Amino acid sequence: MIHKSAARAFLFALLCGAAAVALPAAYPDRNVLMVVAGSPGGGLDLFGRALEHTMLETRLHATGFVLKHMGGAGGNLAKSYVQQRKGDPYTLYVESNRIYVNKLVGTTHLDHHDLTPVARMITEYLVWVVRADSPFKSPKEVLDKLKADPGSVVFGVGTVPSNDQMNILRPVLAYGVDPKQVKIVPFKSGGDLMIQLLGGHVPVISTGLSEAIDQVKAGRARLLSVSSPQPLEALARVPTWRSMGIGVEILHWRGLFAPPGVPASTIKYWDDTLAKTIQTDAWKKSLDKFGWYNAYAGSSQFRKDLDRETKIYAEILTKLGMAKGAEKK
Image 1 (cartoon, helix red, strand yellow):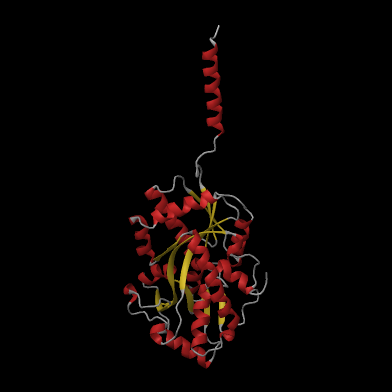
Image 2: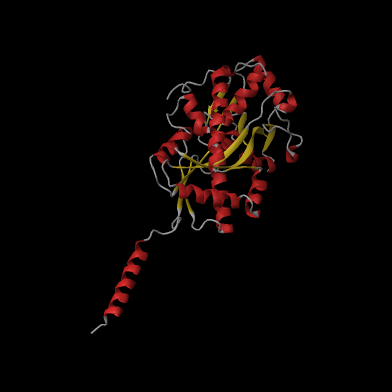
């Protein structure tokens, strides 16, 4: 016969074992779905893959990522997909300032308030790019031609609305050209955009530096301008808009978002993990490789910055007659 005290101890052990089994696993205990709002080869894809590579190399993130590319519709398909995964801590969304610009121009009713801002990670600058054999030798030549005939030069961009588009409309507006008459053709993504340029289908494209740098280094393309506030050390001969007397600068950041309603503990995990990530040599190597600049902001600061940027762009887009959704709730 089993002694009563022994029986109690056995029962206690069973209960403790059951409780241990019932406890939820520490987050994360499986791969995280990284939804990239663009096609392979574009700037968002490059950022997503660089982050994935850094996480694997540094082991700061306990599990891995599964990348899901959702290009098209200016990022709205991806945004809607993530917004519908309410409360899912195993989803991250890679996007740029289209997160709020799209709502301002009226292509969606969703913006950053319908998701959960996680972090702004990097910024790059935008460039005007031509083929190596292009007759255009400077951005001024392009602007002068537009001033004589606003429809005489066709520009390519990865998507509209976007910073790529703003990097055309804002300089031409400041140069005295009617931006509404300038011809801009959107393509599927930054990767597809470069193919269109090299194939001779558009004479000038506006895109992120990281999406153009490989073709420039290979001698197939040339940079005409860069949207940085000051000349970049690595691109000392490439004029900025400000160096030309045009009061325009554009930061083209990449950030991470989660679905709405995710646990606060999930956001804390990413705040802690990403703050460590940006300090690693592996991440700094990615910045150097792609011509990116650190622009890290944790979830709280990122949310504030998004609200501030939205107000600024609402004013700009209103001047351009493009803020069709600015007053919509």
